[in-house]
Length: 295
Image (cartoon, rainbow, N blue to C red):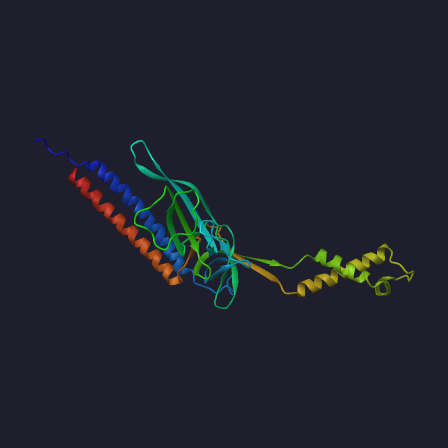
């Protein structure tokens, strides 16, 4: 009777050490994120200052109509999808190969309880979807939306995965808020003002024809242009300023998060992930120590 093969303790120790190192590094990353999320207070969109913010509200289309998801045509404010094909090697082992994937880059609106709104640019964000579906088919593109229930066995060599943020979903968004003020084009307003004055030549001449020769010479026309520019600038500055605020990827590396959670739920999720990574790292340390002692 042959002796049993000894366990490869050195390999087990090395693998456990690598696992522990990875898990503990992720633990510290999650711990830092948790502190950042906890130390960033939730603010209302109306009173949010430019910079890194945490805001909550309902997700709505930026335009008049919601976006249609490419695979299922369902209305949403953001989508991402992946199409994979089942392939088999010479031994008959199956694997899925992604042949197509894409994600929405369109802005959507975030509206809070005060009806204040801002835009959200989802590019590069860590997005937790409100809906995630996986279904199968026989063609490279699905014939329709996913079935109401997922079958136990998949039928078809194509797998479709779709993630959505639904219209009206309550979201917590953390990112960098940037505001842009639009005052209008003073030069265009000046030209429009001069065109308006030209329609009433008598008033125009009465106001700017200094030598009373019945026409405006170059100096008099320049005086009229300067007067139109002054009036246009005054009216533009007195008009309501259109301010567009957009939350997008932070410039300093802070996390850019979009999740259908409240601010407190988002903090609890980060703490949960940090705890799981810590436990995984602790298990790795224990297994590594056992393997070294047993070698």
